[in-house]
Amino acid sequence: MTAFLLCGGSAFSATRVYQKPSDFVKSALGALPPTQALKLTAAQQNAVSRLLGKRYKTTTIRYWTRNGKTAYILEEIGKVEYITTGISVKGGRIEGMRVLVYRETHGMEVARTAFTKQFNGVSVKSDSQLSRNPRNIAGATLSVRALTKLARLALYLETLR
Image (cartoon, rainbow, N blue to C red; front, side):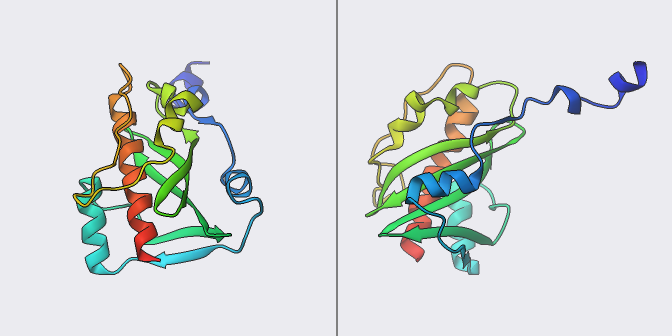
C-alpha cells in the first residue's frame, strides 16, 4: 500500500472528461467532416503568442468545417494542467464552447454550461480583445483566463482560413 501512495497521484487524478473531442465536433457541426489542418507561419505564431502571452503548444492546428461553421479543439493551461476545449465559430462569432477535458484540481466550474454559454455570440474587436468578457469565478480565475484566451485564439484562427 505504501508503494501505491508513493507512486504519485495518478490514481487520484483530477481529470474529468465531459465529452470526447469527436463527439463535440459531431454535435457542433451535425456530422464529423474530414479533419483539416492549419500550419501557422512564423508571423502567425508570433500573433498567437501575443494573444496567449506565450507560444502555443503546436504549430499545426486541426479543425473541422461544415455548412459555414468551424469547430476547433484547443488546449490552454489553467494553473498547471491543460484544459481541452471545443469551440465552434460561425460568421466571426463564437457559436458554442464546451470544456471537453478538465485536468485541474480547482476551478472546474468553468466547465458548466452556465459559464461557457457566456461566450456565445462573442466576436473579437480590433484590439484583439473579446467583444464581451465572461464573468469571473472565485477560485477559478486562471481557468477563466485560459478559456478567454482560447476564445480569442479560435476567433483569430478563423481569420486565417
